[in-house]
Length: 53
Image (cartoon, rainbow, N blue to C red; front, side, top):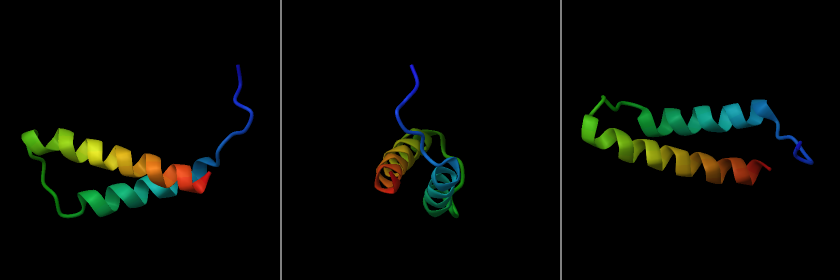
């Protein structure tokens, strides 16, 4: 079952790259914060991609 429309992979890549660059810039790995930062990034990425569509 194919979706009716496909999203532009280049636009989504740019959105994800900018979110990760903004959120992760200057951070060092910390075991306890990793899950929280990952969740924040993915939520922000979802919002930004929905705006692009």
